[in-house]
Image 1: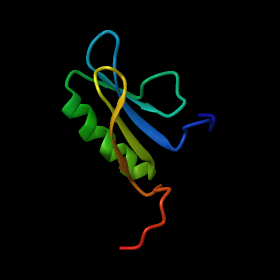
Image 2: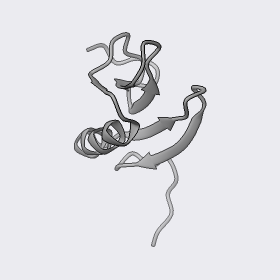
Image 3: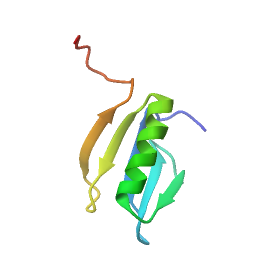
Image 4: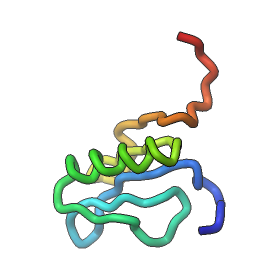
Length: 79
């Protein structure tokens, strides 16, 4: 996979045909598809944690509703 813009992220996004997809940032194809958002989020957290990427969880309208950092936090805060 080519590293491009957003390659340090994973996204849970609504699929136009129904259900939810997990996509790597900048990818054209989904790496996984789920009927339920909760299942997609659970698996995406595992993938993002293993890859140490940011996870962006989108709402049904496509806008980012939640963000999780799994080792690639751009902020440098101790604590």
